Length: 95
Image (cartoon, rainbow, N blue to C red; front, side, top):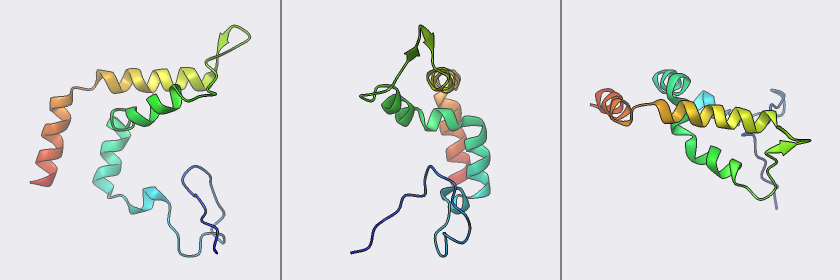
């Protein structure tokens, strides 16, 4: 039985990845451009899951952790995006 490996979160040397590709390599250039500006809107669900996971540390020694602040910043950016604007962009690109 072969062990399946996850290459999503960690950088691997090119010799390890004989036939596999990074997830960014399979995305189109237009989609990567959209994700650059509106990525926090698209990944807000995963950010909320990480934020409310069982052992996530929000504070250490009375200070908020860098990871917690980074997630809050991304969620804040995602909430500022107008949803109708994104729908118009996606409809214009698909049609």
